[in-house]
Amino acid sequence: MHLSTELEIYYHLGVALAIGLLMGVERGWKEREAEEGSRVAGVRTYGLIGLLGGTAALVAQQLNTLLLGFAFLALAGIMTTAYIVTYRRFNDASITGVVAALLAFSFGAMAVLGEAVTAAAFAVVATLLLAVKPVLHRWIRALEAEELRAGIRLLLISVVLLPILPDQGYGPWQSLNPYTIWWMVVLIAAISFVGYFAVRIAGARKGTMYTGLFAGLASSTALTLHFSRIGRSSPIMTPMLATGILMACGTMYPRMYLIAGLVSPQMWRPLLVPVVVMSLLVYAMALYSYWRSHAEGEGKTVAASMHNPLDLAPALSFGVLLALIMLFAEALRRWTGDAGVLALAGVSGIADVDAITLSLSRMTGGDLAAHIAASGIVIAASVNSLVKGALAATVGGGRLGLWVGLPLLTAAIGGLLSIQWLG
Image (cartoon, rainbow, N blue to C red; front, side, top):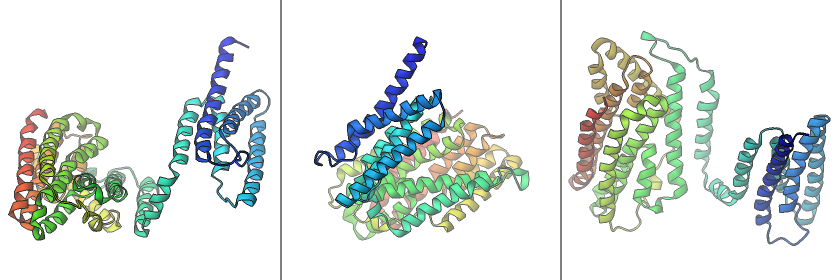
């Protein structure tokens, strides 16, 4: 046997052994208080199971591939027998250890069969999953029925509906692509879903700054309206409420940047300067508001105000709005050129920035220049910021409007001035 071949075999078997030991350390640590002999498998056993998988794969390559399957079945039988004995003795019905052992065997076999990197990567993921059991169980206990249904709906609109939609243009100028429109709806829904659960998992007690940061992923406008209503009845909370509003509004700019870049990588560069300028201006004032805030119990009212972000009606409404904006944007571009697109961006920003961001970013794949699309997105974000400042002043009163409106006005001006760097 050639030396390089022998070294390769040693490497693959070493990876198989390391995988078993890694999973065994996690299993052994969890059962470290158990009496000697009461554990089905510990560090050594898992290491040997990983090595067994690698050895079985090596032998199967030389003789017959069926041997690997028989070895797996034999291990499954041994682990099942051990599980039955453990269940009768300790009344422990968990099969996690059995599954983990079978995975260690499988990963060891994968390492020898030429997938060492993949096997090692998923062994780390499996070990992490085993280690976070208390956290996962706490999340499950905190999960409400409506939130579970929301997660299922997200899977429905993404995994089930998205793949079956036609990926081609329809309507005037072939500007309406059902697959693209629905993919963008899924993108927005997923970001809102993550933002919602970030607030739920972290807890509102972390403070309005932390809550506003994550709530901005779901809806900075909704948070602005809710905090403004609180500010109307509790003026003493103005600095604290301004902190949450500004953090949510500041988060809108990186979110906008992320959405545009995911849809069209051409947007990463032209949007960078405006997004950095606008974010820093708003976040700086949020930090100042936080410093001025001395109220206790920050953010306790936020959790009650958070609504499930995945009701199908709002998702469908967003899809309709997005389709209309895509159609009007293409029509204005053809009829009036770039000026019409920028005007549409300003009008769209009154209600929402996500739809126009998605539409203009998608159009950069055609005849629309990236710097024009970026200019439109910045205009929409600036208009939307001014609207939220006006909303805070109208609903929350003049004092809250001053705390929120001035930073948002400054950010809007800074964003519009930074457009000169887009070309």
